[in-house]
Amino acid sequence: MSAPVVLILAAGEGTRMRSATPKLLHPLCGRPMIAWPLSAARDAGAGRIVVVDGPARRLEGAVEPEVMFAVQEQPLGTADAVKAAAPQIAPDSTVIVLCGDVPLVTPETIRALADAHTRSGAAATMATMTLADPAGYGRVVRGADGAVERVVETKAPGDATAAELEIREVNTGIYAFAGGPLLDALAAVRGHNVQGELYLPDVLPILRARGLGVGAHEIADAGETVGVNDRVGLAAVRALAQRRIHERHMLAGVTIVDPACTVIDVDVELAPDAVVAPFTSLHGATRVAREATIGPHSTLIDARVGEAAAVVHSYLTGAEVGPRVTVGPFAYLRPGTILREGAKAGTFVEIKNSDVGAGAKVPHLSYIGDTSIGERTNIGAGTITANYDGSNKHRTEIGAGAFVSVDTALVAPVSLGDGAYTGAGSVITDDVPPGALAVARARQRNVPGYADRRKQRDQSRRAQPAVDENMPPAPDAKPPAPDAEPPAPDAERPAPDAEPPAPDAEPSPSASQP
Image 1: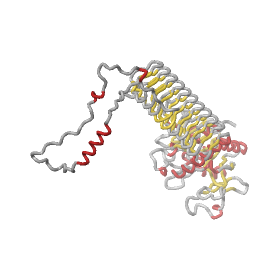
Image 2 (image 1 turned 90 degrees about the horizontal axis):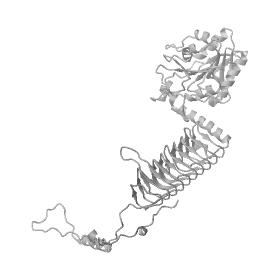
Image 3 (image 1 turned 180 degrees about the horizontal axis):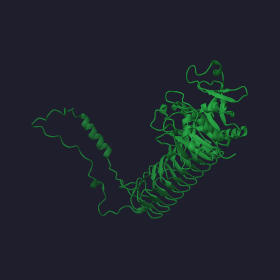
Image 4 (image 1 turned 45 degrees about the vertical axis):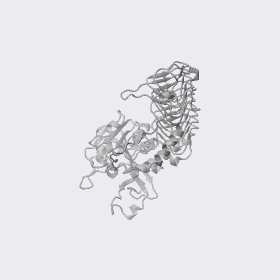
């Protein structure tokens, strides 16, 4: 059998979505809806894929360049849509017709339909399904020989007889055709209503009347044929897609603790023995390695997580987390962030466009941006890299084995050498040589007796009678004496010729423990 031509009907206006976004571009588990039938057709071995779009041609930029397009100028029904693609149909080809808003059809179903069609030698083969409640679906009417005669629609009262309404086999809107008979029958289809709409099921009785075979291939999984008309339908299809995605990963050895509260996009990759905890969302091209634990309450977008890493209560986008790294709780890793093996980004830490070396730790309450941190370096709580001067971003370079004390501000561009230290509360504006201690803060000054003087002053104020501030003072009233001030700062300072403390007397740097 030659590779079939797959037509995807996608010209519907989608007005029931009530959206400025075309219906088939609404996201469905990480892909636009149109990408789902496109992917299924490609994986089924389609020789050519043709999307029938509307006159606005709003889908072309959202699909691969090798996909061909036909344009249905007016929305005149499914048969008219197939007519629009007639130049792409060779008489000796097999044609598979799919609906763009029925996104969950699988490659296996497409291949099975094409095979059944080829084996039967029929001019048309319709994909059907049997439902306990077929309300709203067109009923498949078969002849005495078991062949499909026609499809009876049930959109309006009186469309079908009582006997026809009892039929539980329904039309899915998915077909296989022989190219030549299809093109000939399309020319004979007539309009149904004032608008002159042409319906593809009307091809079937035309083929039967010409003595050509019309068969059926039943689909076992009704979820594959659920269509999307509005956002309620989109939510229903999304739930079905999520269940399919979850089952695929769990059968491959991934633990998803509670699938009901876990969101995983279709292109996410999870290795066996990975664990996904509740209230976790994994999106885009996220990759999670073996024995890594994600969640609870974590969101990863286009992130990569190494073996045995742990991400808890955190948000990662475009970040790379190496083996045995710990992230969170409440960490935010932004694009360009790399945490190498054994590193840590702890509580209330934000890291952007930075490379954190193996074993380095940023334990809590820090912002690290445009920074390189060497191996085994410890970043104290409250450390901030001031990387933006209002116009440009600048880099900070921190060497291996450095010790950045708590509440340090690193004003970029600046570098700290290997093994360098900073004093707590320092504002570092100049490079620090390897092994050096940088202390950049005002010297502490104690004012003896200040608390007693303040208490006396406050008591004196409370003892004074309240004064109406809006009343002008008496003409001969003198202004109150100013409050006594603490001794002038110079009184507390050493004499000008006093030697400052030796460098060794500096307070030792202090950093939070890892």
